[in-house]
Amino acid sequence: MRERLHFLLLNIGHFLDHFFTLVFATVAALALHREWGLGYADLLKFATPGFFAFGVFALPAGWLADKWSREGMMSVFFIGIGAASTATAFARTPLEIGLGLFVIGIFAAIYHPVGLAIVVEKWRNTGMRIAVNGVFGNLGVASAALITGYFIDHGGWRSAFFVPGMLSILIGAAYTVVVWSELSQPKAPPRPRAAAKALPAGVRATLLRISIIVFLTTAVSSIVFQSTTFALPKVFDERLGGIAVSATALGQLAFLVFALASVGQLVVGHLLDRLGPRTVFIGAAAVQLVFFAMMPGLADWPALLCAMAFMLAAFGQIPINDYMIGRMAEGAWRARVYGVRYVVSFTVLAAALPLIAFIYERWGFDALFRVLAVSAGIILAAVLMLPHKLPQPGAAAAAGA
Image (cartoon, rainbow, N blue to C red; front, side, top):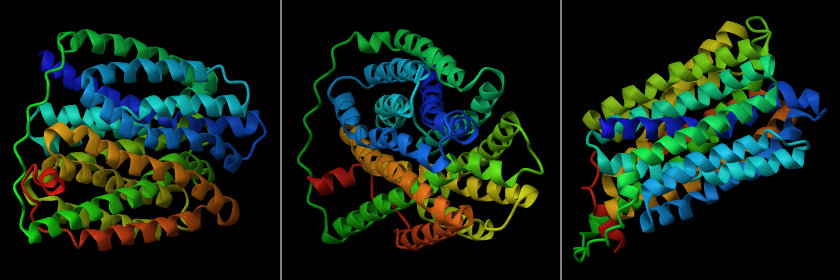
């Protein structure tokens, strides 16, 4: 029972992590540009430092978790991100809200290198566990638009930061109680590792090739993920006028798209343990390429259906790189390897915001979707070079020794 509750709270943490980082996306698209008289592209500038913090602080968070306590870091995550969101609700200027988003990003950086390392370390059926955990993260993305839209219509944008922030603090207290027995025990010293055996040159070359592909696809996929999840409320605001006319209705449609897209991760998690990452990755990248290329010019129902298709593939792709890292990285180093992966991922997420603003100001969202189609093509080309079978677990650490 305790293990099930622990896994559930970790999943809720993933939900909150993505929820808090995207509350501002809906606030900016549907409220602040009217209340503060700033353009959508101008508001995106104040979110950029928060996403840089989301990426840069992932590596020290993973290092500290390995040195101190992964469970302790998760307690810090819940309480810290909740307190930061609550404080952001009182922002009076764009600079103040930018500072609040930066602090949210610092605490948000904890989850992926730490929470994923716990999931991979503690339970079997890694592919499905990561997929279930990923679904919660995607539902956080979806609920950010839904819940924030509701608060904008019924309580104002500040309540969208304040109420979830207080809830996260309470969940952090509950998590601390659940893992208290592990927190109260001194951390066991790491077992000395046996000297790594020299690997054949061919295996080392394969590991290097996989590593390059993982980090390349991580970077490009982050452009896709940020552009779709952050910009979709604004895309819907512009293109679904014949379907939805209020912030709540737009939030509901965004939630519908993201929630249905989350099913993609369950399908991928089921297939990863059976077909391997290469086959699944090729399918996800190909679907994105097709539907991103179709999106320019669409509006209302055709746009909504096309968005469902490319989001299904984009969300489905997310756990694949985490699965490969979890299979190859040695347990003692896994949080730090995930930390490096998410430094790359979320630093690119931050850089994608100025890209979205630049393209939107000059050419609109049609040009953005053409850029995303090219990005999906790059991912597909890279994935075609993956080997059909991954090296054994721990091989990556051995190769780096």
